[in-house]
Image (cartoon, rainbow, N blue to C red; front, side):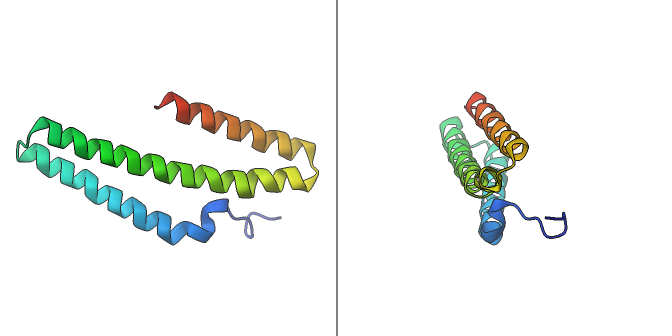
Length: 101
């Protein structure tokens, strides 16, 4: 597979993922307005929590697609080096994600 025809697992959902990112971006701008308007701190924190949840949901979707496409493809390829590389990437990603929580 060449780099020109290689794609990542999330490619089928790319438009939906970008739409979700734009929605999250709007939420962040909303929090910025709340701060500028000196809104109540608990209301600001509630919105930040919603943004965090939205980003985590997006991350889980990308991670799921990575497992089902990239890791599964490497395992199915029969190439032990590719399988080891993708498995290591997966574990590293899970560890990074778990540390941020």
